[in-house]
Length: 369
Ligand code: ATP
Image (cartoon, protein in one colour):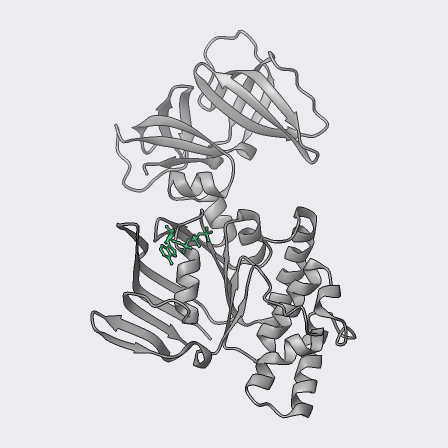
């Protein structure tokens, strides 16, 4: 079932200061998809999730789940469906697993509190546990499980009540790095099989890209970009999104030919002329910055002395390199400009080396914000 949020606002007042946690949010989560709210601490993602669940009261706006308006407010007139009637399942960071109960009792809890008959409860709990691959763990004390297994118990508890949508609030952030990566892959598979509309809050870009059909990037109470993981990573629309989604080079520049015959756009920068993706509405003299992810930079070879280099070829000096297992990260300097790129893990490169770089025009974006 889809979720629709329109013009949602929420301001908190603390210590004499007003903080617009949600500054007029419009959000559509299509039926059966996984959408992630991604952004730095304090950007409003948890507040938005809690408003949808009914755990927080917005100031104004509308929230719909399927055809039901679960909250609508404008000044003094509000309409609200209580949290337990919204058909929302939740999975929290802290799992909210009861330590004194067995796995079965934990998962059965929502059904028992609805007065579901005993035989039906047993059947549904057993199905939910099979689904999260914990069949046979019914009688284990919940505390005798690993962090990843406890997280699966909390997912089983969220789905046992057959909710219309599931909301996830940073469910993996208490796991250590390795377990987190494993659980991420498992969760992706579970969510795909489950097919329930899911809204997932995280500040971890890898988690967002790995799990979602759509990533919604938030900044200071607003949505700044929304798209598939590939779109927000490769086609960021602002400096903030480009920087938040992964490492990139930013080169201030001015447009000199918006319709260069190469099919790209020519921009003058401190490291020389750069061809980059054309931008509708760009004009000569438009100021901005060329942004290029580090995987679009490559070392062509050692620097020769054949004079001026063509566009996108840049003379640079290696300043340092780091071996990071799967790849090496190389820091360089071209005049006063710092650059970063990725090379193969097996290609060691010594600091001080003078090299010619190529910035792939297809990976250069011109940003004005
Ligand atoms: P995090 O990743 O740290 O949880 P977040 O993006 O989920 O951050 P929110 O928790 O939604 O952000 O908070 C948004 C803003 O609202 C922050 O500036 C926060 O300090 C403020 N805020 C949240 N809850 C309250 C509250 N109960 N009282 C006062 N201010 C609040």
